Picture 1 (tube, rainbow, N blue to C red):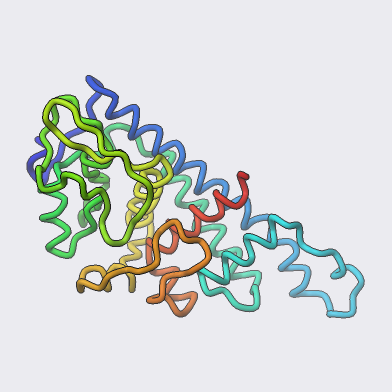
Picture 2 (cartoon, rainbow, N blue to C red; picture 1 turned 60 degrees about the horizontal axis):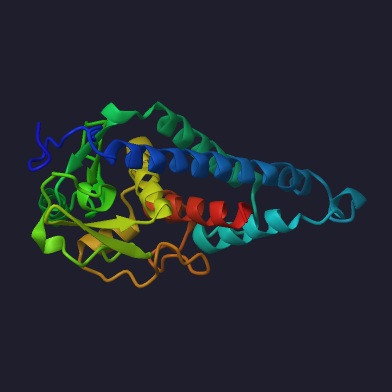
Length: 259
């Protein structure tokens, strides 16, 4: 088992590598749990409006500012229209399942690989260069270039100064040490990668955005732009079928509800 082959290597405890992966995992758990709770807060008003007549005075209460933000994000990213309470319930259950899966992950659930290995898998349509999962395998493979500051681990020289795949953006800090160059992505970006890959483990969700990336399409909407959804996603069904949407919605809800 080595990070320069497809088997990968368990995150190191000799350096801060596992600590950094663990911090991203903890934030991913918070994002999934917080998103489920935010959606849960919409269920009672949605169910109430579903069963009561429009003239009923019990419908007069307005949603809170936080609820209004979450509703707007549902329209933008999951393309939810009409706020059917069962759609909200299904998405709530989805994020609860994600949270449960994330809670089961530990150090042994992850494998670190070099950028060269990650790029090789991505070129075969198996994932992007930040992280990926493999069929019939419960491990999450992480590109060490974005999840480790080095400390002796081999890195791919071709990754020097690049820092992001087309589908993800965000402020990066290039850190040099021991002759290696690693790109230290922000904690929310790394947490989003772990949540994204956990979505693949739970739902599959290799949908329209993934197909566009694998076909070489440039994704012009960044992962941290909460005002725009992915143009490849037109319906709720498409949104549910794509891990990029699950990741981005959780990121945006977390950002909107923790200010």
